[in-house]
Image (cartoon, rainbow, N blue to C red; front, side, top):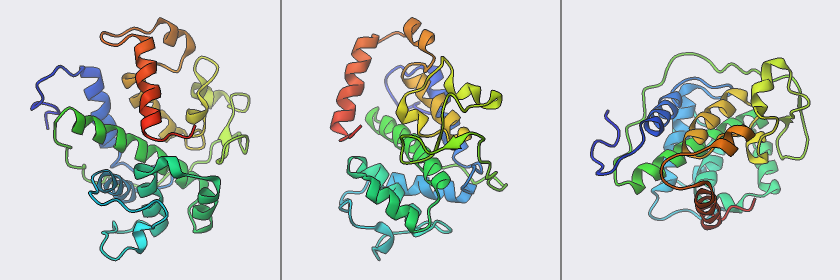
Length: 241
């Protein structure tokens, strides 16, 4: 499919390529979820964002009879994906502990968060520019890797993370430029998903590498304008961070 062929505006080629790559990667096996489960999470996110009568944050869609539930996707994953997509400002540590108590693992949660973020970002962009969301790709064969990174510890986040100090040579790329924003550091428990978020984010926003960020320039909004838009978007979305 030729993305945005029906849109009467110029959309950067690098942004289109990044979105296409992020979209197709949903259908590949992850670290903790199968390709079918990852696609199921994506369908929940799309349904949540387009829901004309959204559920209240405290209502679990998996327990609502008239709601479709993707095959092979645990109810707790359906509930978490829906709430993350539709009401992220209502998340609490108590809610997080509750979904862990219902059987979701820390690694599964982190990977689920990255899937929700990618699908939501692309879905909103496509809708805003007036295009149609592409069909989800077919699932690819394979099993989750279930790789736990070395140096994973509980620090200041709800989830365990790999700090810059604990990142060995094979994970130094997690902290290009010496640091990473805390909201991104929270994803280091699943490095492959972390990388996929970076690949999409840096095309749409600014590089994490501090020097690259200082030197960053792109036609359109300047850095100050971009930060203003980002802050306003966070406020509108109810971001408690």
